[in-house]
Length: 243
Ligand code: NAP
Image (cartoon, rainbow, N blue to C red; front, side, top):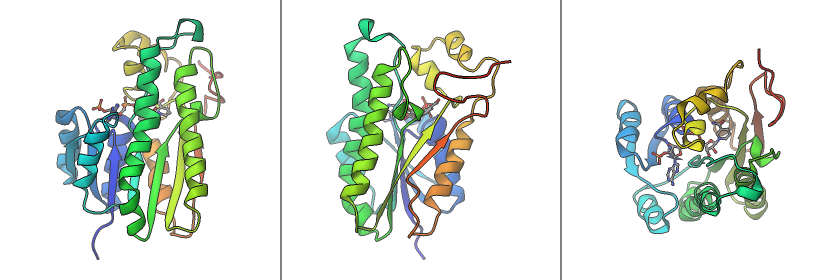
């Protein structure tokens, strides 16, 4: 039997890279995309995966990437992230624009481009990596939480619109995961990024990949709507126990 095909966006690091590794172990043929091609190829090579440049903020580029995917059973919309932690009064509009473009519109573009193939697979699955920021808010986080709330809405709406069609929709909502997320958020400031996880044990990217792999490997008639997964020491977006 031919292997099922999965597409993972933002597979050059963190949750996307770990998910690619898990899905390869589950037997998927993988098509991986991200902007840092050297990093992406380093992830793809040992997995025998296809790696191609992908910027989810570029509609024409998304179309080109998706045209080269021969078929698609599973789409993991993972590319994205946060920029900054300023209060609304001081928010930088260009950062908000990037957060909406990469997280929300990136998911929209990839989903639109691949939906015909996902449906044609006869057993398709769209996974949206949102966040607990898609369900909660916190001070300084409005640009990111608004974008992640929009991804949550996108997942819920898609599930309604795809009713009766052979496509499952799952939203993944992680709490704190130690990846390059905080480094990107704080513009490469290593010290500030490290402080985010001080005195607590965050999730590893592999923990989230585990949730994704579980959701996509349930029998076809089972739709996992949402998985909220946090470190034991994190009880909400704003409450974290630190020793
Ligand atoms: P990460 O290590 O920074 O990974 C982000 C990935 O997204 C990278 O592979 C990056 O690759 C890719 N990406 C960013 N912009 C892109 C674009 N325009 N086009 C294509 N790829 C792009 O952080 P992560 O934690 O794994 O983040 C993955 C997802 O999980 C994000 O959606 C994030 O919001 C979500 N999340 C993270 C956490 C957390 O605490 N870490 C918690 C909840 C949810 P390139 O730079 O090579 O393009």
